[in-house]
Length: 262
Image 1 (cartoon, rainbow, N blue to C red):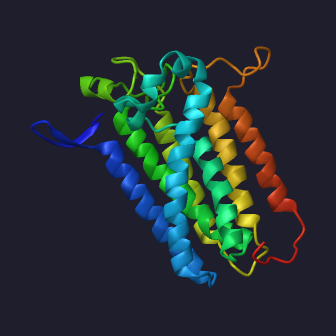
Image 2: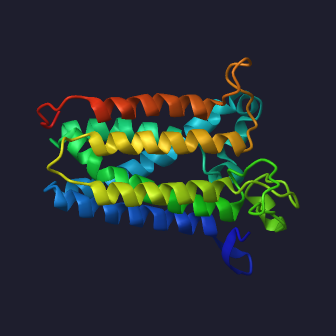
Image 3: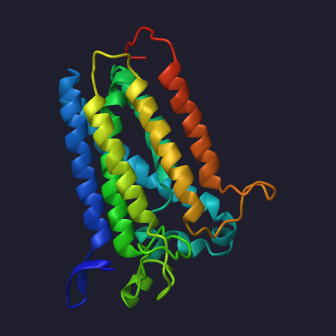
C-alpha cells in the first residue's frame, strides 16, 4: 500500500490525512445539500459539521485509549506519540461524542434535532467510506488471515511507520469491506432523504444499516482486545453495534411527534 502520497526529501504528505480531508469535504457537501433541501440554516449546519469533525477525532482517540487502557497506563507517553496521532482511533467513539455534542449544539441553536440528523446521515456514511480508504493505505484497521481470492498482502515497509499490520500475509481487506458498505448506505440514504417524511427515520436507518455492517466486519477483523465476556465471542465494538442497532430500530419505529428545536 502507499501510506505516503507524496514524498520530497524528508517531507511527505500522508495518504491517510488526504483521505480524511476528502472525507470531510464530501460529508460537508452531502450535509449542506440535504440541509438546503430541508430548509435548514446553512451556516449553522456548516459550523456543526466542523464541530462534529473535531469531536469525532477526539472521541475516536478517547475510545482507543479506553479499549487499551492497560497499555496506555503503563506507557502514558505513547498517548501523545506520533504513531498515536496518526492512528485512526475507534470510529464508534468518534461517532458517539460527535452525536452528543451535536444534540447540545442543535438545542442551543434552535435546530430541529431529528430533522437535522436526517440531513447528516448520508454524509456520515460517505465520509466514513472515504476515510476507510485512508485506513487501507496506512495499513490500520486490518483484517485477519484470509484465504479468499480477494485477500490483500501488505509488503511496503513504510506501512510499519503507520501501523503494526503484518507483512507478507494475506489478510481480509476489512477497510474495503467497510468502504463498499458505507458507499452503498450513502447511496440508499441520499436517495431516500425526504424532509417531508417523519423526522428521525433516515438517521435510524443509517444506524441500523451501519450497525449490521460493522457487526459483520468485526468477525474478520484483527483485534488486540479479547472478547468483553469470555463466554460470548463478541468484541467491544460489536456490543456497541448492537446498542446502536437498537437505537436505530427505535428511531425507525417510533411514532411521529412534534419536531421542534428540542
